[in-house]
Image (cartoon, rainbow, N blue to C red):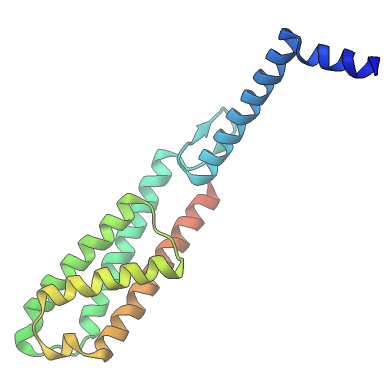
Length: 169
């Protein structure tokens, strides 16, 4: 009984309580730093140590994602069965879709979850429908091709992000 009273007296002692609080805060700060570096929010650079992505690595990642998105959207437009009168409309729609994808890249919150992909497929479909009038662009066949392409683009952008984060640029 006396041992328990001594322990509770020591724990409630101000210096011991302060030590516990400080230790808890230190653990919390290190945990927060770890999480931020793993998410790529924070890059820690030392003489021979680098954790997280550097600013140059982030710029390179964004540049690679931009190049990929631009090429894949242009390729998609070239492969479409477009009537002669719809070429300009398809080009305008593709530029707006590309602008939307660039926004995703810059916001840096792209993920490959089914819900995220579905949301982005709907967003791209709505952009296209706002621009085009041709029956071809309103067909179920085109919708399926469009959804497949959006899913492919998102998965590749996420793959590039994971690759560059893994390299720790």
